[in-house]
Amino acid sequence: MDIWIKKLAENPLEAKVVPESVSGMTRLFTLLFCLFAGVFLAATELDFSFQARAFGAYEAGNETAFLQGDFLPELNISQNLGKDIGLMGEYSGYAFINGVFGDSTDTELGLQNYRAWLRIGNPQTALRIGLQRINFGSARVLRPLQWFDKLDPLDKSEFTEGVWALLATHTWLNNSNLWIWGMLGDEDLKGSETNPGKEGSLELGTRIQLPNPAGETGLAYHQRQAKQGDEYRAGFDHRWDGFVGAWLEGSVSMTETSDNNADSMATALTVGIDYTFPWGNGVAITAENLFGHQAKTEKTRLHITEHSLALLFSYPLGLLDTVTLLEIHSFVSDTDNLSLIWRRAYDYLAWELGLSLDRGFEAKLSKNPGFFVKLSYNL
Image (cartoon, rainbow, N blue to C red; front, side, top):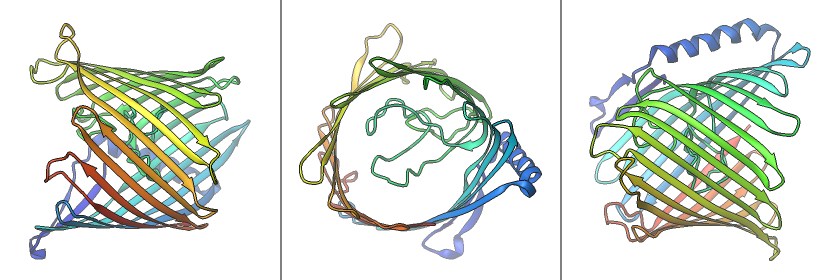
Protein backbone atom coordinates (compact mmCIF):
# COMPACT_ATOMS: atom_id res chain seq x y z
CA MET A 1 0.00 0.00 0.00
CA ASP A 2 1.45 3.34 -1.05
CA ILE A 3 1.76 5.45 2.04
CA TRP A 4 4.12 8.12 3.33
CA ILE A 5 4.14 8.70 7.05
CA LYS A 6 5.83 11.45 8.98
CA LYS A 7 6.22 10.96 12.72
CA LEU A 8 7.04 13.96 14.85
CA ALA A 9 8.76 13.05 18.07
CA GLU A 10 8.94 15.35 21.05
CA ASN A 11 11.81 17.01 19.20
CA PRO A 12 10.42 17.96 15.75
CA LEU A 13 13.94 18.20 14.35
CA GLU A 14 14.23 14.41 14.64
CA ALA A 15 11.24 13.79 12.38
CA LYS A 16 11.80 11.80 9.20
CA VAL A 17 9.69 10.88 6.20
CA VAL A 18 9.82 7.16 5.52
CA PRO A 19 7.93 5.20 2.81
CA GLU A 20 6.34 1.90 3.75
CA SER A 21 7.24 -1.11 1.64
CA VAL A 22 5.30 -1.31 -1.61
CA SER A 23 5.01 -4.66 -3.36
CA GLY A 24 5.52 -4.96 -7.09
CA MET A 25 2.01 -6.35 -7.50
CA THR A 26 0.55 -3.31 -5.75
CA ARG A 27 2.39 -1.06 -8.21
CA LEU A 28 1.00 -3.20 -11.04
CA PHE A 29 -2.58 -2.75 -9.83
CA THR A 30 -2.06 1.01 -9.54
CA LEU A 31 -0.56 1.11 -13.06
CA LEU A 32 -3.48 -0.87 -14.51
CA PHE A 33 -5.97 1.44 -12.87
CA CYS A 34 -4.25 4.56 -14.23
CA LEU A 35 -3.99 2.99 -17.70
CA PHE A 36 -7.66 2.05 -17.99
CA ALA A 37 -8.80 5.29 -16.38
CA GLY A 38 -6.74 7.29 -18.86
CA VAL A 39 -8.17 5.43 -21.88
CA PHE A 40 -11.78 6.07 -20.91
CA LEU A 41 -11.40 9.44 -19.18
CA ALA A 42 -12.25 11.56 -22.23
CA ALA A 43 -15.62 9.84 -22.79
CA THR A 44 -16.58 9.16 -19.20
CA GLU A 45 -19.03 10.75 -16.79
CA LEU A 46 -17.18 12.11 -13.77
CA ASP A 47 -18.42 12.68 -10.25
CA PHE A 48 -16.35 14.21 -7.46
CA SER A 49 -17.15 14.19 -3.76
CA PHE A 50 -15.24 14.35 -0.50
CA GLN A 51 -15.51 13.72 3.22
CA ALA A 52 -13.72 15.71 5.92
CA ARG A 53 -13.69 14.59 9.55
CA ALA A 54 -12.33 15.80 12.87
CA PHE A 55 -12.15 13.66 15.99
CA GLY A 56 -11.10 14.35 19.56
CA ALA A 57 -11.10 12.00 22.56
CA TYR A 58 -9.90 11.83 26.12
CA GLU A 59 -9.33 8.63 28.12
CA ALA A 60 -9.29 9.29 31.84
CA GLY A 61 -8.02 5.79 32.62
CA ASN A 62 -4.59 6.48 31.16
CA GLU A 63 -4.84 10.31 31.06
CA THR A 64 -4.37 10.39 27.29
CA ALA A 65 -5.88 12.70 24.68
CA PHE A 66 -6.28 11.94 20.98
CA LEU A 67 -6.78 14.35 18.10
CA GLN A 68 -7.38 13.32 14.50
CA GLY A 69 -8.27 15.04 11.28
CA ASP A 70 -8.70 13.38 7.89
CA PHE A 71 -9.78 14.15 4.36
CA LEU A 72 -11.09 11.64 1.79
CA PRO A 73 -11.55 12.97 -1.78
CA GLU A 74 -13.41 10.59 -4.10
CA LEU A 75 -13.58 10.50 -7.90
CA ASN A 76 -16.07 8.20 -9.64
CA ILE A 77 -16.11 7.47 -13.37
CA SER A 78 -18.71 5.64 -15.46
CA GLN A 79 -19.07 4.82 -19.14
CA ASN A 80 -21.80 2.97 -21.02
CA LEU A 81 -20.16 0.54 -23.44
CA GLY A 82 -23.42 -0.64 -25.00
CA LYS A 83 -25.57 -3.79 -24.69
CA ASP A 84 -26.05 -3.23 -20.93
CA ILE A 85 -22.28 -3.37 -20.38
CA GLY A 86 -20.79 -0.55 -18.38
CA LEU A 87 -17.43 0.53 -17.05
CA MET A 88 -17.23 2.05 -13.58
CA GLY A 89 -14.33 3.11 -11.44
CA GLU A 90 -13.49 4.80 -8.19
CA TYR A 91 -10.41 6.43 -6.82
CA SER A 92 -10.29 7.91 -3.34
CA GLY A 93 -7.38 8.94 -1.19
CA TYR A 94 -6.95 9.22 2.55
CA ALA A 95 -4.96 12.06 4.09
CA PHE A 96 -4.75 12.27 7.85
CA ILE A 97 -3.02 13.80 10.85
CA ASN A 98 -3.12 12.08 14.25
CA GLY A 99 -1.90 13.27 17.60
CA VAL A 100 -1.54 11.40 20.91
CA PHE A 101 -0.90 13.48 24.00
CA GLY A 102 -0.18 11.87 27.35
CA ASP A 103 3.04 10.86 29.08
CA SER A 104 4.66 11.47 25.69
CA THR A 105 3.59 13.20 22.48
CA ASP A 106 3.38 11.44 19.13
CA THR A 107 2.09 13.02 15.92
CA GLU A 108 1.61 11.25 12.60
CA LEU A 109 0.93 12.57 9.10
CA GLY A 110 -0.10 10.22 6.33
CA LEU A 111 -1.32 9.99 2.75
CA GLN A 112 -2.45 6.74 1.15
CA ASN A 113 -4.79 5.11 -1.33
CA TYR A 114 -8.22 4.34 0.13
CA ARG A 115 -10.05 2.93 -2.91
CA ALA A 116 -8.75 2.38 -6.46
CA TRP A 117 -10.81 -0.01 -8.56
CA LEU A 118 -12.36 -0.56 -11.98
CA ARG A 119 -15.52 -2.58 -12.66
CA ILE A 120 -16.73 -3.86 -16.01
CA GLY A 121 -19.92 -5.83 -16.49
CA ASN A 122 -23.70 -5.78 -16.71
CA PRO A 123 -26.34 -5.76 -13.94
CA GLN A 124 -25.88 -9.50 -13.35
CA THR A 125 -22.21 -10.28 -14.04
CA ALA A 126 -19.23 -8.10 -13.21
CA LEU A 127 -15.47 -8.13 -12.83
CA ARG A 128 -13.84 -5.66 -10.41
CA ILE A 129 -10.10 -5.18 -9.98
CA GLY A 130 -8.09 -3.00 -7.63
CA LEU A 131 -8.17 -1.73 -4.06
CA GLN A 132 -11.71 -2.40 -2.90
CA ARG A 133 -13.94 -3.26 0.03
CA ILE A 134 -15.06 -6.89 0.36
CA ASN A 135 -17.30 -7.88 3.24
CA PHE A 136 -20.23 -10.19 3.84
CA GLY A 137 -22.17 -11.95 6.58
CA SER A 138 -25.29 -11.35 8.65
CA ALA A 139 -23.85 -10.41 12.07
CA ARG A 140 -23.48 -6.73 12.99
CA VAL A 141 -21.19 -6.58 16.06
CA LEU A 142 -19.66 -10.01 16.82
CA ARG A 143 -18.71 -11.14 13.32
CA PRO A 144 -17.00 -14.50 12.66
CA LEU A 145 -16.95 -13.61 8.93
CA GLN A 146 -15.05 -10.37 9.43
CA TRP A 147 -12.30 -11.72 7.20
CA PHE A 148 -11.32 -8.66 5.14
CA ASP A 149 -12.70 -5.52 6.81
CA LYS A 150 -12.52 -3.66 10.11
CA LEU A 151 -15.96 -2.06 10.13
CA ASP A 152 -17.04 -0.48 13.41
CA PRO A 153 -20.78 -1.03 14.11
CA LEU A 154 -20.93 2.48 15.62
CA ASP A 155 -19.28 4.25 12.67
CA LYS A 156 -21.94 5.63 10.31
CA SER A 157 -19.32 6.40 7.66
CA GLU A 158 -18.36 2.69 7.52
CA PHE A 159 -14.67 3.54 7.21
CA THR A 160 -12.45 0.52 6.61
CA GLU A 161 -9.28 -0.23 4.68
CA GLY A 162 -9.64 -2.08 1.39
CA VAL A 163 -7.87 -5.10 -0.07
CA TRP A 164 -6.07 -5.48 -3.40
CA ALA A 165 -8.17 -8.04 -5.24
CA LEU A 166 -9.76 -9.29 -8.42
CA LEU A 167 -13.44 -10.02 -7.73
CA ALA A 168 -15.88 -11.74 -10.13
CA THR A 169 -19.58 -11.72 -9.23
CA HIS A 170 -22.76 -13.11 -10.76
CA THR A 171 -26.32 -12.63 -9.55
CA TRP A 172 -29.16 -14.84 -10.77
CA LEU A 173 -32.73 -13.61 -11.22
CA ASN A 174 -33.83 -15.34 -7.99
CA ASN A 175 -31.24 -13.22 -6.10
CA SER A 176 -28.74 -16.08 -5.69
CA ASN A 177 -25.21 -14.78 -6.14
CA LEU A 178 -21.70 -16.14 -6.55
CA TRP A 179 -18.43 -14.38 -5.71
CA ILE A 180 -14.94 -15.59 -6.69
CA TRP A 181 -11.86 -13.60 -5.67
CA GLY A 182 -8.11 -13.54 -5.74
CA MET A 183 -6.25 -11.25 -3.31
CA LEU A 184 -2.73 -10.04 -2.81
CA GLY A 185 -1.26 -11.30 0.43
CA ASP A 186 0.79 -8.98 2.63
CA GLU A 187 1.97 -8.66 6.20
CA ASP A 188 -0.75 -6.20 7.19
CA LEU A 189 -3.53 -7.85 9.18
CA LYS A 190 -6.93 -7.87 7.47
CA GLY A 191 -10.22 -8.02 9.34
CA SER A 192 -9.94 -10.16 12.47
CA GLU A 193 -6.67 -11.85 11.45
CA THR A 194 -4.00 -12.44 14.10
CA ASN A 195 -1.50 -14.19 11.82
CA PRO A 196 0.25 -11.98 9.19
CA GLY A 197 0.10 -13.13 5.60
CA LYS A 198 2.98 -13.75 3.21
CA GLU A 199 3.98 -10.68 1.21
CA GLY A 200 3.22 -11.00 -2.51
CA SER A 201 1.38 -14.33 -2.21
CA LEU A 202 -1.97 -15.10 -3.85
CA GLU A 203 -5.05 -15.67 -1.68
CA LEU A 204 -8.09 -17.37 -3.22
CA GLY A 205 -11.69 -17.63 -2.11
CA THR A 206 -15.35 -17.88 -3.06
CA ARG A 207 -18.81 -17.29 -1.64
CA ILE A 208 -22.29 -18.36 -2.72
CA GLN A 209 -25.54 -17.01 -1.29
CA LEU A 210 -28.83 -18.83 -1.85
CA PRO A 211 -32.38 -17.69 -1.02
CA ASN A 212 -34.66 -20.39 0.38
CA PRO A 213 -38.05 -20.66 2.13
CA ALA A 214 -36.29 -20.24 5.49
CA GLY A 215 -34.42 -17.05 4.51
CA GLU A 216 -31.01 -16.63 2.88
CA THR A 217 -27.98 -18.89 3.35
CA GLY A 218 -24.36 -18.11 2.49
CA LEU A 219 -21.30 -20.36 2.25
CA ALA A 220 -17.74 -19.02 1.97
CA TYR A 221 -14.20 -20.37 1.57
CA HIS A 222 -10.78 -18.69 1.65
CA GLN A 223 -7.20 -19.96 1.61
CA ARG A 224 -3.91 -18.11 2.02
CA GLN A 225 -0.23 -18.43 2.82
CA ALA A 226 0.53 -17.04 6.27
CA LYS A 227 3.74 -16.66 8.24
CA GLN A 228 2.82 -19.55 10.53
CA GLY A 229 1.74 -21.81 7.65
CA ASP A 230 -1.01 -22.30 5.08
CA GLU A 231 -4.45 -21.33 6.35
CA TYR A 232 -7.85 -22.58 5.17
CA ARG A 233 -11.12 -20.96 6.21
CA ALA A 234 -14.75 -21.99 5.76
CA GLY A 235 -17.72 -19.91 6.79
CA PHE A 236 -21.48 -19.87 6.69
CA ASP A 237 -24.29 -17.53 7.57
CA HIS A 238 -28.07 -17.67 7.50
CA ARG A 239 -30.62 -14.91 8.01
CA TRP A 240 -34.36 -15.19 8.54
CA ASP A 241 -36.72 -12.21 8.58
CA GLY A 242 -40.08 -12.78 10.21
CA PHE A 243 -41.72 -11.09 13.16
CA VAL A 244 -38.11 -10.68 14.34
CA GLY A 245 -34.86 -10.79 12.43
CA ALA A 246 -32.66 -13.77 13.32
CA TRP A 247 -29.29 -14.95 12.04
CA LEU A 248 -26.56 -17.50 12.50
CA GLU A 249 -22.96 -16.89 11.42
CA GLY A 250 -19.92 -19.09 11.90
CA SER A 251 -16.40 -19.82 10.67
CA VAL A 252 -13.77 -22.52 10.97
CA SER A 253 -10.07 -22.02 10.21
CA MET A 254 -7.27 -24.58 9.95
CA THR A 255 -3.58 -23.65 9.87
CA GLU A 256 -0.84 -26.07 8.83
CA THR A 257 1.90 -25.09 11.27
CA SER A 258 4.86 -26.68 13.02
CA ASP A 259 4.79 -24.03 15.77
CA ASN A 260 3.61 -25.73 18.96
CA ASN A 261 2.64 -22.35 20.40
CA ALA A 262 0.26 -21.54 17.53
CA ASP A 263 -3.37 -22.61 17.40
CA SER A 264 -3.94 -24.79 14.33
CA MET A 265 -7.75 -24.80 14.53
CA ALA A 266 -10.21 -22.09 15.51
CA THR A 267 -14.00 -21.85 15.39
CA ALA A 268 -16.43 -19.00 15.99
CA LEU A 269 -20.22 -18.97 16.07
CA THR A 270 -22.61 -16.05 16.52
CA VAL A 271 -26.36 -16.22 17.12
CA GLY A 272 -28.27 -12.95 16.77
CA ILE A 273 -31.72 -11.37 16.71
CA ASP A 274 -33.10 -7.87 16.19
CA TYR A 275 -36.49 -6.28 16.76
CA THR A 276 -37.93 -2.75 16.86
CA PHE A 277 -40.25 -2.18 19.81
CA PRO A 278 -43.10 0.33 19.22
CA TRP A 279 -42.11 2.51 22.17
CA GLY A 280 -42.05 6.23 21.45
CA ASN A 281 -40.34 6.71 18.08
CA GLY A 282 -39.30 3.03 18.04
CA VAL A 283 -36.50 1.32 19.98
CA ALA A 284 -34.36 -0.91 17.74
CA ILE A 285 -32.59 -3.65 19.71
CA THR A 286 -29.96 -6.07 18.41
CA ALA A 287 -28.58 -8.94 20.53
CA GLU A 288 -25.69 -11.23 19.55
CA ASN A 289 -23.98 -14.10 21.39
CA LEU A 290 -20.54 -15.31 20.23
CA PHE A 291 -18.76 -18.56 21.11
CA GLY A 292 -15.11 -19.03 20.11
CA HIS A 293 -12.97 -22.18 20.44
CA GLN A 294 -9.38 -23.08 19.58
CA ALA A 295 -7.21 -26.22 19.50
CA LYS A 296 -3.48 -26.83 19.04
CA THR A 297 -3.92 -29.78 16.67
CA GLU A 298 -6.77 -31.54 14.89
CA LYS A 299 -6.70 -34.28 17.54
CA THR A 300 -6.61 -31.87 20.46
CA ARG A 301 -9.91 -31.10 22.15
CA LEU A 302 -11.29 -27.64 21.43
CA HIS A 303 -11.21 -25.25 24.39
CA ILE A 304 -13.32 -22.13 24.72
CA THR A 305 -11.40 -18.88 24.24
CA GLU A 306 -14.23 -16.41 23.81
CA HIS A 307 -17.83 -16.09 24.91
CA SER A 308 -19.28 -12.62 24.44
CA LEU A 309 -22.68 -10.98 24.49
CA ALA A 310 -23.42 -7.76 22.59
CA LEU A 311 -26.51 -5.57 23.02
CA LEU A 312 -27.08 -2.68 20.62
CA PHE A 313 -29.86 -0.13 21.25
CA SER A 314 -30.85 2.69 18.89
CA TYR A 315 -33.53 5.32 19.45
CA PRO A 316 -34.36 8.28 17.17
CA LEU A 317 -35.12 11.39 19.23
CA GLY A 318 -36.46 13.14 16.13
CA LEU A 319 -35.65 13.75 12.49
CA LEU A 320 -32.08 14.85 13.24
CA ASP A 321 -31.03 13.14 16.48
CA THR A 322 -30.32 9.51 17.33
CA VAL A 323 -29.05 7.93 20.55
CA THR A 324 -27.12 4.64 20.29
CA LEU A 325 -25.89 2.41 23.11
CA LEU A 326 -23.63 -0.62 22.71
CA GLU A 327 -22.75 -3.00 25.54
CA ILE A 328 -20.30 -5.90 25.07
CA HIS A 329 -19.72 -8.35 27.92
CA SER A 330 -17.04 -11.05 27.89
CA PHE A 331 -17.91 -14.06 30.03
CA VAL A 332 -14.37 -15.46 29.71
CA SER A 333 -12.47 -12.41 30.98
CA ASP A 334 -15.45 -10.95 32.93
CA THR A 335 -15.04 -7.52 31.32
CA ASP A 336 -17.52 -4.98 29.98
CA ASN A 337 -17.40 -2.24 27.36
CA LEU A 338 -20.22 0.29 27.14
CA SER A 339 -20.46 3.05 24.52
CA LEU A 340 -23.15 5.74 24.40
CA ILE A 341 -23.39 8.07 21.37
CA TRP A 342 -25.66 11.02 20.60
CA ARG A 343 -25.63 11.83 16.88
CA ARG A 344 -27.16 14.78 15.00
CA ALA A 345 -27.13 14.64 11.20
CA TYR A 346 -27.98 17.33 8.66
CA ASP A 347 -27.82 17.03 4.86
CA TYR A 348 -24.04 17.40 4.69
CA LEU A 349 -22.91 17.91 8.27
CA ALA A 350 -23.04 15.52 11.25
CA TRP A 351 -21.63 15.54 14.75
CA GLU A 352 -21.40 12.97 17.53
CA LEU A 353 -20.85 13.12 21.26
CA GLY A 354 -19.77 9.89 22.92
CA LEU A 355 -19.09 8.37 26.32
CA SER A 356 -17.35 5.03 26.94
CA LEU A 357 -17.14 3.07 30.17
CA ASP A 358 -15.42 -0.22 30.93
CA ARG A 359 -15.08 -2.69 33.78
CA GLY A 360 -12.65 -5.46 34.67
CA PHE A 361 -9.69 -4.33 32.56
CA GLU A 362 -6.16 -3.83 33.83
CA ALA A 363 -5.39 -0.22 34.71
CA LYS A 364 -3.11 0.23 31.68
CA LEU A 365 -5.84 -1.05 29.33
CA SER A 366 -8.77 0.78 30.88
CA LYS A 367 -10.24 3.85 29.17
CA ASN A 368 -12.72 4.46 31.96
CA PRO A 369 -14.27 6.93 31.49
CA GLY A 370 -13.65 8.05 27.92
CA PHE A 371 -15.18 10.99 26.09
CA PHE A 372 -15.12 11.89 22.42
CA VAL A 373 -16.55 14.31 19.88
CA LYS A 374 -16.59 13.78 16.11
CA LEU A 375 -17.49 16.18 13.33
CA SER A 376 -17.92 15.12 9.70
CA TYR A 377 -18.79 16.92 6.48
CA ASN A 378 -19.80 15.15 3.26
CA LEU A 379 -20.24 16.73 -0.15
